Length: 106
Length: 413
Image (cartoon, rainbow over all chains, first blue to last red; front, side, top):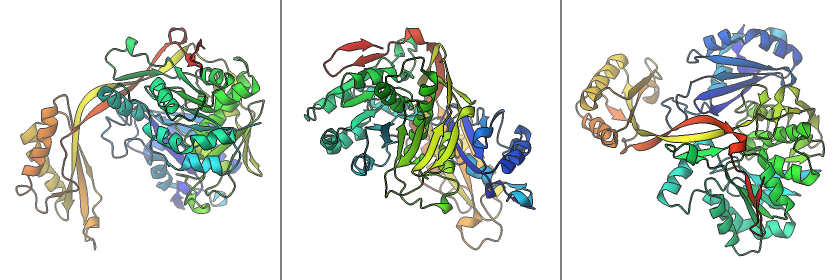
């Protein structure tokens, strides 16, 4: 069954100049193994089609993934014409996207 | 152990936090972060109007109200509120006349190397702050030091860390990263906010040990929560690769260990390695002028309505520098007017301030001559200057890092 990613995952996002960062974390080792396999760069771009070039970093000690979305904010917050120029709510957008999460992980 | 609190995550944060942190429980040091990339631009405009400004003025008002109390309690104050003018802020704190020993850290301004920039500031590290505290300062104000340095400096001074105590420096850097955004560590802006009382989160405290490990906590009786989840959320804020570069140490975020603790969360295990030979520089340049408006498109033919106003505005001010975004927030057959409406945002960015102003006039002149149901969410203003941010890197050895001690003595750090 498809449910929002935020059913099990937390997120926080923000700006670094013209790039946005988006950290996603879960609470159990089993959830992390699923997240790590599921949320590839390609999958993130499917869920957030506005993303361009993306780097992904794994932080197994925090059960977290960190994404850097390059250039999403143009030349920084003062110049950006994006709806959310500091990418504050990017993480909550991602959490609201529906994905297949195995029943036993919810 | 040294108890280091935070009372500000940005210029504009809760004014009463300084008082709350001083009176809410024990502290050795109270820190406050007032600087962000955008703040440097705002302060740069202040400074352009009046060279005696360029610092965070709310910090001075907070000290007016609370410095006597801090001195009586023996709590040291460490803040980057000096912004572009730490010397000016230190003088203003002196003029409060409370007899505090005031020191400041400077040298971060590198505009001589970036002559086109409105602001150009290298991110300095913790050692200037440590120098000031070692000389007995009650208040240390800095310019652009890294946010985490506000915690690392006091811990390094307290424990007498050396420059190559990289694991300890990295541990304190991680504690500093958790504290630098204030209540974002204690349940503010937290994905699982419905599981805690997030009404009025308390500000965070790091109890830092001699090895750089720490316990993140908050004063008893304050709102919010400090849990492995709230701390994880803040650790993930505004980071890139796991090797987190700083001016004093590279902190390896993939070595952080978090454990629940009776008063909050324990952070341990953080590995550090030597810092790079370059310092990051925050550069703000004037990009030009911008103006924007939002047209409300209600009901039928939303796409065609957008096309019409788009053509009309472009023929009045020209297409160059316009960015259009049509947000289809409308729903068919809606039972409220707002949910029947889409929003068409348009922004102009131009080097010509007259064109930014003409944009408003052109928008207003359409009011009786455009799509049916024409209205805007707010009347357009005259336009404002905007900044362009970029990062640069300069050799560490080329940037002076100076601690100006309470007696006026200047120490090259």
